[in-house]
Amino acid sequence: MSKIHLPKDGLAGLKENWSSDALSGFLVFLLALPLSLGIAGASDFPPIYGLITAMIGGVVVSLFAGSLLTIKGPAAGLIVIVAGAVAEFGGGETGWHLALGAIVVAGVIQVVFGILKLGRFGDFFPLSAVHGMLAAIGLIILSKQIHILLGFNPLTPEGKPMVEPIELIIELKNSFTNFFQHRDVVIVGLVSLLIVFGWPMIPIKAMKKIPAALVVLIVAIPLSKMMGMQNTDAYKPLLEFKEGLVDIIGVKVSFAGTSNVGTFIKYVIMFALVGSLEALLTVKAIDMMDPFKRKANKDKDLIAVGIGNIVAGILGGLPMISEVARSSANVSNGAKTRWANFFHGFFILLFLLLAVYFSNLIPKTALAAMLIGVGYKLAHPKEFRHMFKIGPDQLLVFVITIVATLATDLLIGIGAGILVKLILHTLRGVTIKDMFKLKYELKGTKINVNGAIVFSNFLSLQKIINGFSEKENVTIDLTNCHFVDHSSIESLHQLEHDFKAAGGYLNLIGMNEFVNLHGSKHNLAARKRKK
Image (cartoon, rainbow, N blue to C red; front, top):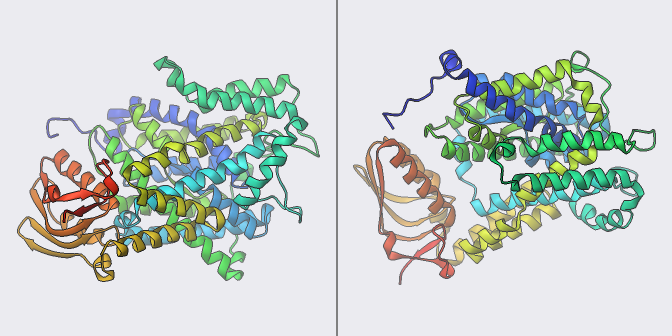
């Protein structure tokens, strides 16, 4: 690694890599433009504020983020929370303004998380429960966006938009039965959906460089025009903007929602906890994709995201995270430094200044098709298969997290997943004390672990390991350990990779004395000591 030229950071990095970063930033902008509009609309925010969030995430947050290649912006994974906040705070414009107050306070909490160096706590949550939460979010996105694709916006008996996932899923029967009511919307939506799923299958590499989301706009806008699609007082199938950037910039946040203490605290916690968790998971994933093997400063990145959420919330924007799809595209497009994220935000700023009225031509059904693609990826059947291959126990935690989330909310859902995981560990002979306190002996660079290593005590082991330089040879002796769970196995593999990339070595002794649970052959399955 010492022979590889690492890209410079700061202004020197801009001078050195501006061409590759500007190109990647432009390509990510083409992807982020329709997605940001769609995510905002699906969150019951004015769509243009999705662009405001992405612009802030690029132009502002990139300057002091702790991760060099991630793209900051509105995330599909937070749609459920944002839409729920708007609805519970009264819906419409009032609900939007009050939800902003919770976003700002959550941003402050994220800054505190970073200052207290709590970035490492992203590794606390069991992976099967985290994946279950993301899959549930995908199903909730699908349950809402399929209605919009078919030209419907289901209402409750009280006349308010439906937000409960179970109700939306049940209501799908009526939307499918009556979908010919808005034939033009359905045609544009189905064509858009075909592009979303078909474009990545095209075998021509040069064409794959063009984001499917951009192709959707290129096709859907003239198709909707040709079919005579237009907004009426009774039905609005197109986005509707009446203001430009100068008109919309200003303080939009209201803290009057604090009078409803329970609801306000609930959404502050969800924005701060789920947003931070998703952001940290993305940073971890992009670190693995970085061709230069650079490691992000997670605490610094949390502070940056928190500041971005404070600014976005004040100005009317959605909560932002390090977004995985745009970040992955950024790496694939050849980005070298944080300036790619800056350029992505800069191009969105130019759009807001020069071409925002173009957005009035975009059909809502086309944006719904893009979000259906996002939701399907989150809840893809392969996620269920992957969990089953690791072990039936992981599938159980995964499914219970999904069901609990759909029936209640994200916090209760992931809490249910964690509880099931702890119960399973108890049945396997892990004591309550061992679950939350790691038993170990440290002798030089050798760590002798006793008892069990599970997600709830892994942070202690990680802290010890992080105390060594990754260029050293560190040994973890598991001879006296009787159980290692799935989340800990995956984290240990990641640490082995980090040490190897840095020129060191993390050696696990005693693993050959373990067997995978339930006969699983997966290398990430939970393991117990042979009898």
